[in-house]
Image (cartoon, rainbow, N blue to C red; front, side, top):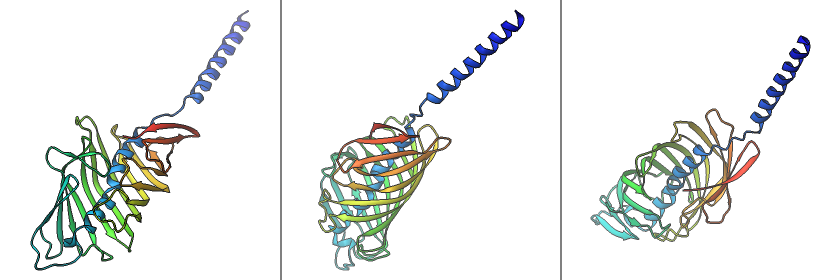
Length: 276
């Protein structure tokens, strides 16, 4: 009888172990914090290059030297653009959305604060750098900080780096850190000046950051990201995001439709998530 009892206990123990392992295998990894946090920063920083270019095309003060011209101030949608040194380079341009904010006519987001852009040379000169910093700059209540440097590498091609990127929630309840090194190709809207609604860029490159939970991650664009200035969200493209200690996530932004939906795939399991 004693042997029978030991045998029964052994069978029960093995069964319990098999059940535990089975349940463990069936548990899916559905954590998307790094992916959604990356998208928050990605969406605004990726529009900086076409935004800077649209402001630049409309303003002769950053296209060439004009020694007889004084400071320039114009209105672009809800922003006031001021060029303080149009007669020499480097030229400084300030894009001011005001202290209370206004609704940007380009993508209907509410922006406030300032973007300050310094041009090393004429806008159309290959090799010119455009360095943008932020002063109390908010988009839909999210604060953006950091330095964005855009370098013109060809007629319609640019590189962009973001260093010290930081995105903070409207209630200061979360913070995302974000840096990137990207290449841009301007594919539409190159010559329409301050009308940026038709501007479209193709983006490739890498990035890295720390999500709101303190987990670091890396990003690699595997299929070029398509970003239209006239859309609130990224519309197309695929990147791989790998959070520290987690399997890679494949984020697919769709086929070009302007909506807030994207698909994330983790270890073969796909599901939809909503972009901010």
